[in-house]
Image (cartoon, rainbow, N blue to C red; front, side, top):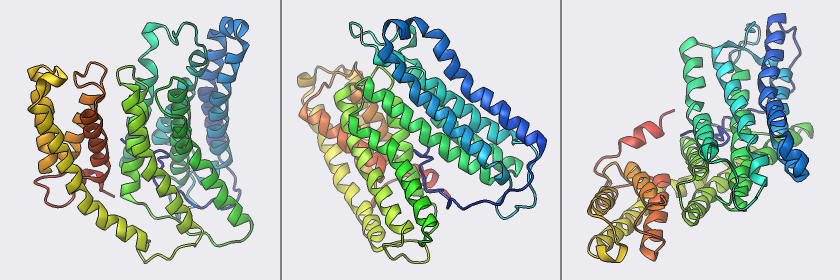
Amino acid sequence: MTTPPSLDNRITPLLELSRQDVPLRLRLQSRQAAVLLFSPWLLTILLFRPLFRDQPVTMLGLLPGLAAALHVQWHLSYHLATNHRRFEEDRLYSTLGAANWITLLRACAVVTLAGFLPLAIQRDNGQLYPDALTWAPGFIYLGISLTDLLDGFVARRQGRETELGKRLDIVTDAAGLLVASLLAVILIRLPVFSLLVGLAYYPFIFGIWLRQRRALPVVALQSRPYARIIAGCQMGLVGMALLPIFHPALTFLAAYIVMTPLLLGFLRDWLVVSCRVKTDAGQQASLDLCAKSMMMKAPLALRLVILTGGIATFFNPNVYQASLSWQLAHSFCCLLAGLGLMGRSAGLALVLMIAVNQSPFGITAISMITFGTAAALMLTGTGTMSLWAPEDRILYRR
């Protein structure tokens, strides 16, 4: 997965850009993008007219989709003059390019996802969607999250990594996370506090803009791979929570586990951006070094807890009424996590295995502790004395 917003610290200062003549073809493509972005919202109005007539309160569900479309389109139109590579302001591309169109298609999917909000607000006999549509929001948002990798890949392959593309990618990820979180909260799949993660991006950006308007110093953030991991986990969590196969008690627990370091990361970034903490040449503060040291040692305790939970479950199978296949899979994943052998992957498997509605382990003290610890291990990694952690080489790539 990839980062809410991509919430991954690729935020550039919101400088006043010099207005240059934008090619006519680029302006026309911007208008075509507007048609693409607003089409799902207009289609929502058309499809749900009877619902709006019978239950006018459901019309409130139209506002997030409209706001998302307007937000992305404003950024596209206002920043067309940044459709160039970094430090190549004199070489403006005359078309949006394939990568930006992929990002805009993702933004279109965000507006489509927002179209489910009027249905979610409707609560007749607990039936929120027709059965055929129950899975759609989760799959749509997971698709939005996974294709976050695609636009960047295409841009690099074509040599067209533009400032406009970076901005659109961040704006799309932020809007997508907020819309998906709001939908999950209305469906009672995530706690209300999850909205803080989706909303945090906007005061952060506003604070940067305000400091620049007041001529106060602003430090450009350097990319932090760990921030991408946390943000990616948050996006993955929201997408999985939107699927109707996981127990809400466990998705709530996972939300608090993932949300805490993400919000602390926003606070840390704000302190760095606003020059309130001192950092070295690599933009590492003393707190960063302490956190890094802790993240190498704390996973040992997490792995021990998981291993203990696996042993307890294995030697008391009758308590959980687990079939042999479930029990062997659970015990094997606990063993892998305890040894630090592909520990993040084993943690993910445990999280899915315990949280799914068909899980025989139920909501017990041991299952909750094992689930929460496995979720935390996905964030921290397996740390020292790991047998093999290939995921780290992938996740920490720059």
